[in-house]
Length: 91
Image (cartoon, rainbow, N blue to C red; front, side, top):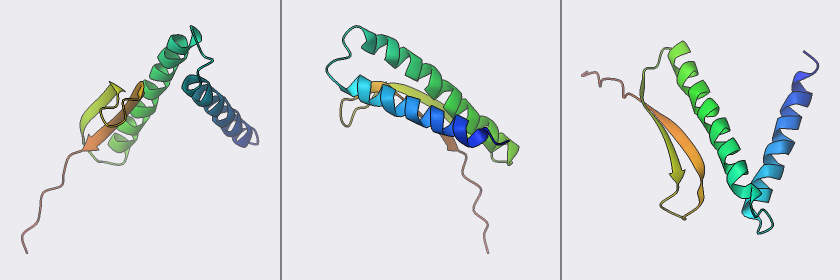
């Protein structure tokens, strides 16, 4: 119980270090490896969103993971889920 804030802080620090490393020009050959590790993290992160939406009673409509952003040409994994829209009640 007391270790939870330390685990959160550790994960936050590691993710910030990896993020800044990926965006730097010094990453070289390690950049593809770091991006693949981030992809694994994104998959688990979005899966957690998907499962929690089921737990709270919302039906997920789609589960998406992309590798490259079309807006800013950032190469790296990102993802999202969309929830199905509730029916509109006529009053």
